[in-house]
Length: 316
Image 1 (cartoon, rainbow, N blue to C red):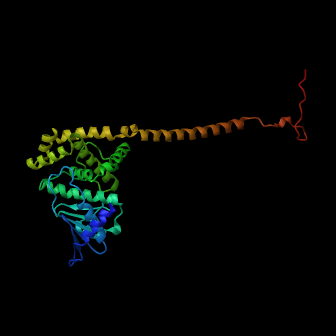
Image 2 (cartoon, helix red, strand yellow):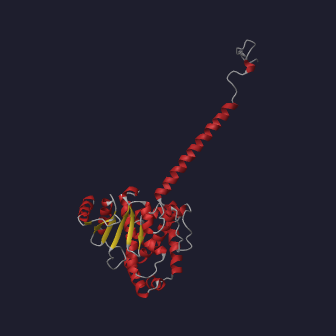
Image 3 (cartoon, rainbow, N blue to C red):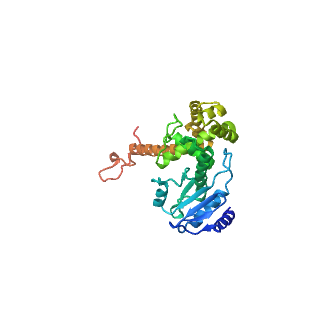
């Protein structure tokens, strides 16, 4: 993989253009133009290679448009490009109106290569989904859920994280799919996973072909609700009810306890705790028994000289 990336990066670097008056340089890919400043050329080339080597996203029928990938050298530049303050935990931003993805420069990129791949696919999915649906309004939960699901965040341990969140009550209420998107990192991560679970539920119901058919019907009828009824045979309210039951049944706390690894881990901890408590109790009990025992040489055995007196044989 590293060899492929290196080769792709070298090919991208050969298409480098001179800087514009603002200091931006660009790398021209097949379907993506990557912009960067200063020393972020390798970061731009790697991101460009990763995106252009990615296969078509599930459910989307047409090839994507030409995109712009901008590597922001600082948080301040990133905020100015977005037009507002980006949360510290947010790794990137997709702006569908400009078909542009903005990612942080290498100097303040906190993640691993695997996280970078997922992040790029997530934002790329936002742009391609927006292009696919045109002027139609995409519900926030569907937009974020599809991007998270398509990026592999769901298959990469997302289901287990959701189980833990639901088990400990750290998830938003499941009474509505229309999630109010939080800005704090942990609640936002759970919201992403909940939204992705809706897409996973739809895919398990009818496969990626069903998802593709749903998107096509949505475009044709220009109605999310009508396409949902036509393809999945449910209104959004019915989908919400069925999805909520599915999530609670599959990812609730009972599922966590039913998992064999979790069960044995909890049982092991419980046994260790019981052993420690039992051992402490036995020590305290022995200490109390020793305190109640008579001494080896009680005072009434002693004569005036302080030595124990032999009581002699018992009298008859």
